Image 1 (cartoon, one colour):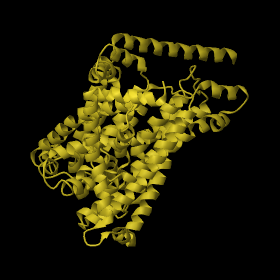
Image 2: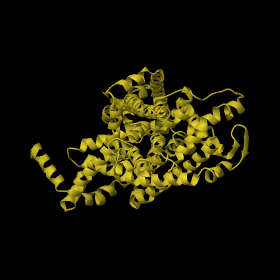
Image 3: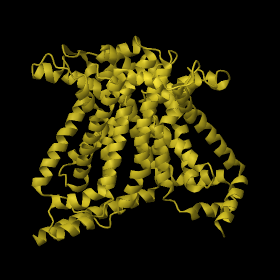
Image 4: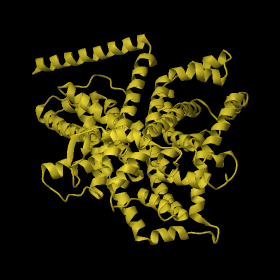
Length: 593
């Protein structure tokens, strides 16, 4: 069969399945209206004036401003430094976990806690902790060191907070990469007399190099797009995200804000293209896949002890910073009166409508998360398992939200749905309602779930689904009864990830939320800016408990209901065999010595 005949057959199969065609059309419409259209309106507002037509005046005015040029320099500088530091610390943690024999379970548990905390907490919690520990009334600076004029606001405050926030992302990436490296390649170098440092620099590091670039760019994008941390701890040190926010909320210059937003979008898009279409492919081609044998862990004390101590110090520092949040909510006046009290929690619920804030955040996130998880799996299914002309468009646009900073997307929604083409009708009516907040939650979480679904679907053999089609099942039946059960773990994981990302979101929704909806993260940000750290910590503590509880419940559900009893038994047997193999290799090594 020729290629042309094959394409014609695929087209006939597609057109003969009305459910699939309808799904594709609805999906293209959703992605176009809620991702492409707001960004297009943003570009129009940046390049078009009702007085002069197409113009570059808004960009010229922006770049003529010293504050804007300084914000660009500050943003790039912070992004580069945070990217380097986060990549280094993440690689250090991953290397210790995968290559070094950690003698206590405490260390292993510590690593898991550190990797989990940034996921289940709001993105700016560490900024609060930094101020409470090292600010002018900080416990470390004032009460331990006797320093009364220390300021954590500015460049170093942002760098430290963002590094501690983002390095667990790099750690999770490197952990997977290191586990996939075949140990026999490194052991061959060791057998030829190479030192551990030589093996790392000549074998391990070259294999990791594309992954290092990937981790750096991901962290760089996260850093320059971050809004909440620079807003709280930045002080007078402006970044692009905070400058854009102040331009639209303080100066009321929508066209100028759009021009600034386009500049930030171009930077993040350029980094995203390099990371997505160059480094990811190179990483996949470089790694050797699943390890062929059990790795011999490093037991040399001269290597293991210093690395373990260094990781322990960083991990404990992060945990102490997170521990400040609940303590900040329990002390009467932070930095002055450390009497235990519950007044901040009482004020949260009695004075500041805490029940409404938590209920609004919880229900909107609860609505968005299953929709996001299902959409992610549908997009993944279409991208991996189906052939049609618009497939590339669906994949690109669904991933586009990953490269769009939250403030940029928020401005796009303001310009697109408060005016633009939708001045009347249903879509204009969604502005200022909970619907638009749910849509933003979906759009922001969609790329993460889609990437997870694509990875899971590529491991499923085509013949499994083809046999269902041969028996007369339609695309909907195949997806619900064959494909979805096979990727249920990815679906459930995407569900909890979408819930956590939604309930802790801040950068996009802060421009869209109205007084009719009280969201927890917006409340935390508001009280932190006012210096009401007790109230901010009380809100943040309850939010962390909610998100951490949701993650634990979902993980428990996945563990006991996501896999069958036979699968759990097989996993236990596999772990037992690995432990026995490592024990045997250790005994063999001792016998040789």
